[in-house]
Every structure is written in structure tokens, then in C-alpha cells.
Amino acid sequence: MGLFDLEQQFAFYGAYHSNPVNIILHMIFVWPIAFTLLVLLYFTPPLFGHSPIGLWDQSFLVLNYGFLFTLIYALYYVSLDRKAGSLAALLCFIAWVGSSALGHRLGFSLAWKVVLASQVICWTGQFIGHGVFEKRAPALLDNLAQAFLMAPFFVLLEGLQSAFGYEPYPGFRAEVKVKIDAEIKAWKDKKQKKNS
Image (cartoon, rainbow, N blue to C red; front, side):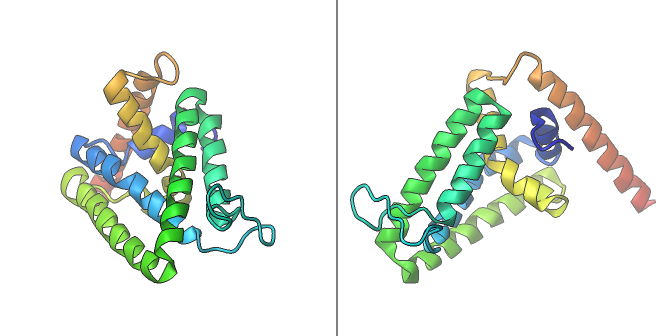
């Protein structure tokens, strides 16, 4: 599967998220998971010695692993689709700044507790979405890296499609739906063979 093939990436992830309630639950919980992970990454050491780029306080924004992950995600999303990817990149950097501010304000001793509580709530919501509504294990069990990389962009594209009818290019939704339907059929056939 091509890492930079938006149709394939979206179809893979979409095959695990075809139930509307599950999609809504993911829209609610995916970005908070990313945000709270960035809160934890705020406490990683700077990549280049001591490198604050603070706007308000010298230790507020640091070029650390949180920044590196934000940059990788942002560049990846822009490479998939210039318009929606740029919005996703902006959201990633807003999340990085916000998580850095929160981490700085809370300090590690309180931040990890807030992150843990948030992660438990968000992951529980997503697993309920898969177990109760989707009736299929999450994508992360089949491809962990792809699921983590694609999840924020998937829910953003779903939201843009639902709210504004956005498509990265004409016919995108139709092409992806065919691939998603084929993936779901293959999964159901495999499940039926396994059960018989």
C-alpha cells in the first residue's frame, strides 16, 4: 500500500470505520488523544540542546519530540492533500502550541494524570465504537503505524465531507467507497470462512 496514496490510506482506515456512530465517536476522541500525547511529549528533552523558541516564556515552546511529531504529521497531511492537509497541519501546530502551554502550566506531576485520564476516556469511547457499533476490531490491531498516522486526517476529511461536501478531487468519495466496500467484503468473507 502506498504511503502517499490518499485513496488507499483512506480506504484502509475507512474499512474499519463505516458505521456512522463509530465515525462520530472517532471525531470526538481522535484529536484529544493526539493532543494529550503531545502534552506528554512536551516533557521530552530538546532535540538540539536547549532550544526554547518561547513566545511568552523562554521555556514555553521547545523544539522537542512533540514538535518533531507535529512536523512529520503536518508534512504528511499536506503531501496527501494540499487543501485539507494544510488545515490538518494548522490544527497539528495549534495542538502542539496548546499542549505545550498546558504541559508548561500543569507541570509533569499533574500533566501525566490528566493525560492518563483523558487517554482512558478517549480510548474507551473508541473501543465502544468498534465493539458495539462497528462490530470490528480497530485498524490499529492490523496496522498500528498507519492507524495512528491516518486517524486525525481521516476524521478531519470525514468532517469536511459531512459539513461541506469536500472532496480532495472530483470522484474521490465514489472511488474510496468502492475500495472500502471491497475491503469490508473481503473481511466478512474471511471472518465467515474462519467461523465455518
